[in-house]
Image 1 (cartoon, helix red, strand yellow):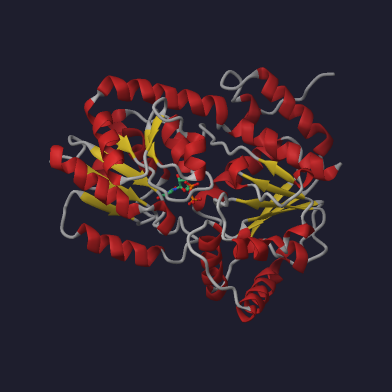
Image 2 (spheres, helix red, strand yellow):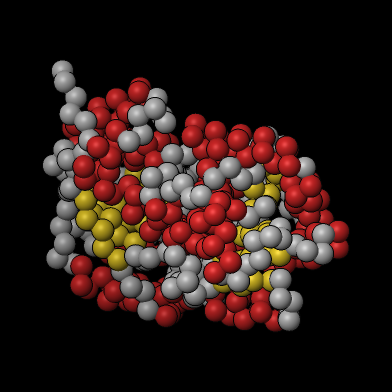
Length: 410
Ligand code: UDP
């Protein structure tokens, strides 16, 4: 049988195995014409939007119609969900009062009003914010749910709360095996590998001379070493520790600079503004601490330049389902100094393609090694790029995604 190929997927020939591409074409065939509707809470910024932006066009090219709708949460629902996220990520126990639960479901019902007439063959609901949709709207069948946060160590009360909504889903999907809810039967769970599109503008090759211009335009002195964390200003991204590490490194290298790159729109975390204000205070009048948040300035090429041409990339998350920023930097030949947070330790192999350390002192000493040992940095950067090529490119995600759809469809 001849296989009809698609240009989007054929770009990856040579980067991933032929066997993987064939597997994708085979998985896609029985799904042709099946309309999939994705629902999430952000169109711009954040990992979920980044994933859908690259996954959906490829799936469409394979003959599987896809639509994507965004539900706008009101302030109450967003605050309630931020608290529930903290609890599910194992931050601290909290109280979910019956009154809050009622108000949250009411908010969700009205947020969904503009979408209630949309019909599809399969419904894919993203994030804990929207987990109740399957139960609230029984026409959404069959439905899949995607949990994107770090639920390796959830608060039991929060887990119980969210679990009551999951019976509505034929399949619950997770971004690493560590975050799978243990009480769900194996036949209703799947892990979907997350991958990046190396051909997108955000990750396209960029010459050093172009990069230098872009960094200088953001106020960075390109002649001095730069440490960067690219992440929205969220509590779990631990931006405070980035500044702490920078200060430790600066004791030995007074010329070092640090950038925290987090476009404010790249956030469905409603507390980002307050965290940014706190960081501004923490940074004081140090001209070498760059807090960058203006989305108009943080274009795809600018973020690309920070990821490619910083001397050291940090990812200090204390919780992380799967850090796309880690994969992105690794693809750009950066050995990331990460933490043992769930997703980060899944992505980085300590001592081979990056470093894992939770406390600021150890992370600072790895940062110093990468700053001072050029050959080590080069070798580990090569390994980081290879790891992404082997494990975390878009076709790997597409394969797992199509396999999940098929499980529900059959
Ligand atoms: N991002 C961006 N601009 C920024 C900060 C982040 O485009 O200023 C992107 C980043 O490149 C990545 C996504 O937002 O693709 C964040 O995904 P990640 O999984 O790292 O974190 P999340 O925000 O989903 O927790």
